[in-house]
Image (tube, rainbow, N blue to C red; front, side):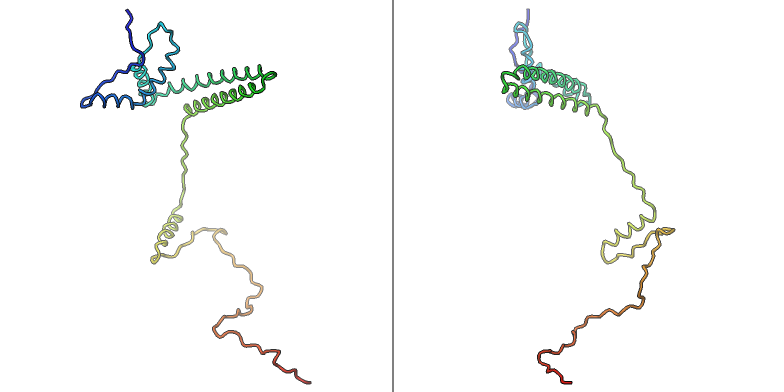
Length: 218
């Protein structure tokens, strides 16, 4: 004789020190419990009415096992889910595209709606495939090596030490050999040159006022 079970029945196990209300609240706040009820409502429609539907606790136990496998690093369920989602969405895209073509001549508005649904299904299928590829793609790590010579390390240490202020020492140049480290003086066409004027507080000499001066007769 088959067991008569009430659908969406939740079995709550009370822990030590918990009241009935606290145990029920803990179970209801558990993500596995809430998602088990939602998944059970949709998945239960696949069963015939003569078949006893699983209880809510049955779905919760199944989801808890899948979650534990994911926490342990086993992503096989996620891989299967993404693969079948991509196939299902691709099938939806084909069906919506077929309906769009069938309504193209008579109902252009319906054709446009079905075309949009086809594009959305295609985008969802592509997103599922991209997620699946990232799931199986190994993570790449970029390591950069910095080669510093002993002389460059001394210069860097002096520059950092000089930023303190008073105890800053002179920064030495690298002892490069060859024409790279040599300095070439620029040629000067006038070595002596004209002396540059030096500003002073006296200021320039006063210029006579041309208007007040009388013209001189020869």
